[in-house]
Image (cartoon, rainbow, N blue to C red):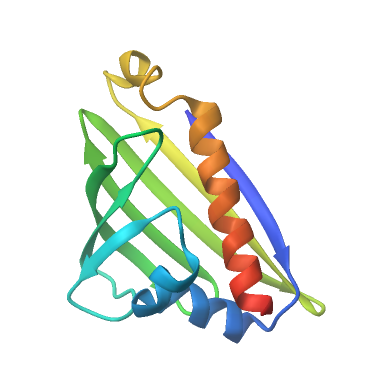
Length: 141
């Protein structure tokens, strides 16, 4: 399963990047990924962070590995839970006065078919859209 969403943000790429990568401020704008815990204040390749997501009533806590950080261009993290491997790629592209943020999340695993009832694709898509809308609002505000 692949979930792709994007948003155009009317802010500098520096502002969007700072908003997205400053984990100490996520609680101020990010209602999708909560309870973030990490050893650093920003993304650093090789580090891990934990957070929780609430697809429905109960939160699901997970740990992600930061695979790649290319300043002002790309952040990639991955993790696994319940036999499902997920990889989330965020790409930042400056186009004129706007910044396009593309989110691509790929899920693989033998249990993914069984978990579609717990984590349906439509709900993951809604959460991704919310995250991008909130990033836009925080970056433009």
